[in-house]
Image 1 (cartoon, rainbow, N blue to C red):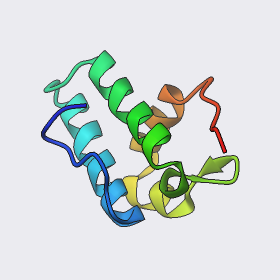
Image 2 (image 1 turned 30 degrees about the vertical axis):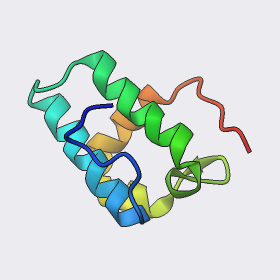
Image 3 (image 1 turned 90 degrees about the vertical axis):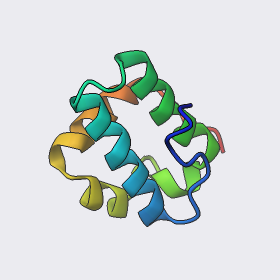
Length: 84
């Protein structure tokens, strides 16, 4: 996980802001494919209660990151199974 991003956001809104930063850096080609995937999977493993709501993404996250970023996150999480 890159040191430019908060590893343990305190709220769902902070998590959404961090995802926005990560995905904006990815789209600006500041970070590569492996780094963006590692960052999204880090959040999925370290704070699933903020990222997920039952079997889908938290509606607040979906609303705050937007449609295009949401499509990227969903693609990166294909095959990921949450552990409860």
